[in-house]
Image 1 (tube, rainbow, N blue to C red):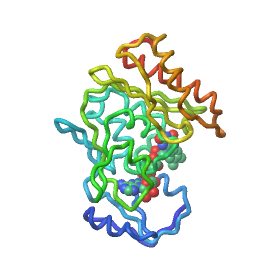
Image 2 (image 1 turned 30 degrees about the vertical axis):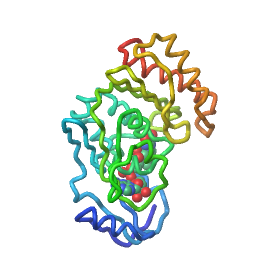
Image 3 (image 1 turned 180 degrees about the vertical axis):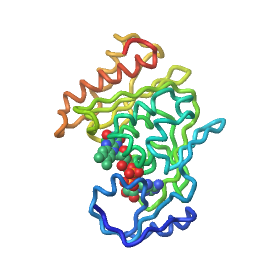
Length: 262
Ligand SMILES: Cc1cc2nc3c(=O)[nH]c(=O)nc-3n(C[C@H](O)[C@H](O)[C@H](O)COP(=O)(O)OP(=O)(O)OC[C@H]3O[C@@H](n4cnc5c(N)ncnc54)[C@H](O)[C@@H]3O)c2cc1C
């Protein structure tokens, strides 16, 4: 459990950012992950008064505030209308409703966790991270940036009409994933595939896939593409098993989008 001397309920992003410049300060999301650590902090910075707990759709993008919980992602009619069951499928296996009611999307993305189901899905979409004061950064770039003193304000998902699906495998329910994999396809037929929990952080997979692949075409393209993806071993699974799983889960995600057998 971490230790903090005071909690600052920030009244503006400027105030939150200014307070976060000290090494002994930290922004708090739902604190589900922070509470597992042992940091001795002077100040924890609460963003809950800044109205960042909303999911809003505009004509060209969907904004997800940093304080939106994983449970909100799971139950949002806005996200369900745009992306079907993908957000619910991504977060439903994460521990239980109580944790998902606390854990935030801001903490999940900021943490850049190797095991993240949330990052695996978001990387398959057209997402920018809005930082204060740095402004917007593509998510793919953000996940490779070292953590700094900025505030993650929101995620912006461009409404490009992508169809998307995510699959994951766990050794037992509520455990971290052995592997997570997502696929998305633009209306023009361009595919984006991601693998996460490799066990390293989620990444996109470069692949030559026809707009409407048969199962055989998908298998051949996936075998070639996954040969280039680094997988690792840990207590949950070996690298070879993860590579095999990636092929299976990505094929299922592609077929799910195609409306075929999964
Ligand atoms: C037991 C357990 C099991 C889990 N299993 C899974 C799983 O299977 N799959 C999965 O994807 N995830 C899993 N998670 C992770 C979880 O989903 C969240 O990603 C995690 O708890 C972080 O979210 P949080 O809101 O609790 O962030 P916090 O713990 O509050 O913060 C995490 C980090 O982000 C920083 N931070 C938070 N918000 C901001 C912000 N707006 N701006 C700048 N910095 C910020 C904090 O300072 C801290 O460094 C698990 C977590 C736990 C505790």
